[in-house]
Image (tube, rainbow, N blue to C red; front, side, top):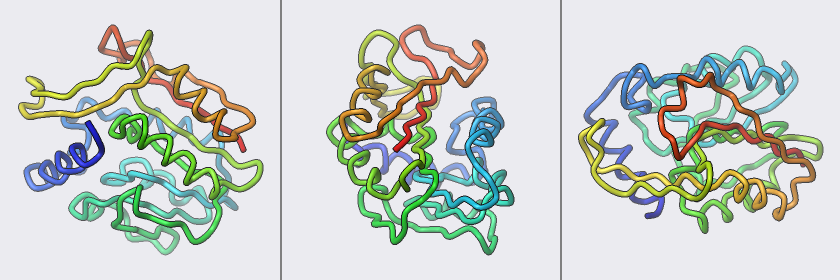
Length: 211
């Protein structure tokens, strides 16, 4: 499994489902209000945010008036049609692996993104974007992680009726990767209520990595 598989999946999805919630597969899977409330703890109106894997803008559409500037990186053009057209939102239709930032940011967010990269790709991404976090800034990461070990899904999903790819890495492994790369303080937060965690072997966590 690699990101190319996941990217093709989302490109196909964007042609089938034109709704803003398409990236959540099922509308009831949209927990972005929890995400936004979590991010509110780390932002202020003078901050710049780099949001990697912005999807349809479910998060940044609720954040743009709380910060100075947002760069939204999302390769699927059909998804970015849902992102608000505001003066302080810049939309970049490139992949996370391709994009090269021009400035450093106070906050870099990766929400529901890193599970679509294998471990080798994830290390590459963290190394690349570590450079673009300001000193004292933070990288905020949220997705499902393996509770006791890595959990890889690579096959047909009955729930969404198509092939699906995800690599839910063991949480402690992800934390150690971030520390190895150079983040001086890495904390985990249990961001969702119990009913949002539907599977026994994975769990939603946020990681706060401070440079």
